[in-house]
Length: 425
Image (cartoon, rainbow, N blue to C red; front, side, top):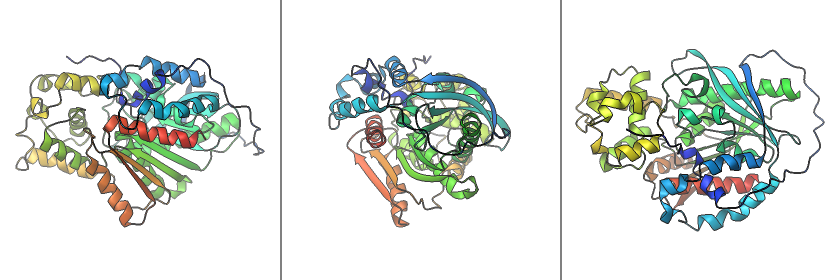
């Protein structure tokens, strides 16, 4: 049976920091408060409750990353850690700069009102990180890559995602449905419209918190970023803000990496190669079967021990890296390949559900879009990003496409490093 050893992809950068000695954090000198007129408190509409408050400094993040010190070694293997252009040397100066310029923060774990994929009102949870020194420089909405119910942002409070904004940005990180206060629910992994709604509602709740706690309005522009599955979710959130101008949110940058922007193409690619280093498909099929009411008998979709234990193994209670270690990289070992045939009406229902929930290419972003992908990615094929980039170029969008000669994890590290260098200037 798979075991949980806390290795979520969201913490893969931990090993980078552990390789350097961090003993002190030198916060940025206090800057003057803005002259913005203090706003009167307003009744909470989206915000249900402030569950906890916690002071955070840069070293707190380092401690969390130290706990995850084995992530890179476990995922890539020791011999592959220094791939690409020399990852360790490449980021040393950047990390030194980040430590010197990071500010003190207040982390608010909150509950707020939103809806599930079926439109039913629920209470979700997330974290609002607010700089304690100086006026906020803007807002960063970092989509969580966490897929482990035990390690969601509201339970960790100090998360990797908040690192990107520690020079003075307000950082918003939603647990998403199936985590935190809604952890009893099935995780709607591929329901991008719903993830966008959940994250946008967190922003509204955070706006109420900032006004009532600090007498300030929320900056109107936001930077969106996400890695892997969270890249597609961030892309969906950008579209959501574009379609809902009444929210008054302007997206000024999008940084995404290694996303399965076309879920059906990713599924078909894996079925062709019968190989993946990340056994996400069982969880995705379990989720689709639940929320789409497909009526699948998953004992016929899966085989071996997975067919008997999918209720335990595909719910987010076991990290997917651990599930991959147990199931292996050969899909034929745990999937009944006869099911995945276009002559099977049940498989056609799966394909229809995937198409229904993909992010439509029906809009044009007005801000720069930075897309990264690794040519050696064995989680999500390069074609996933190539297809999105081709669309963006066809409509005249401002897109920067970076293809590295690396795998999925290494490429995500590369993008995060470039983003940090810009934010920590």
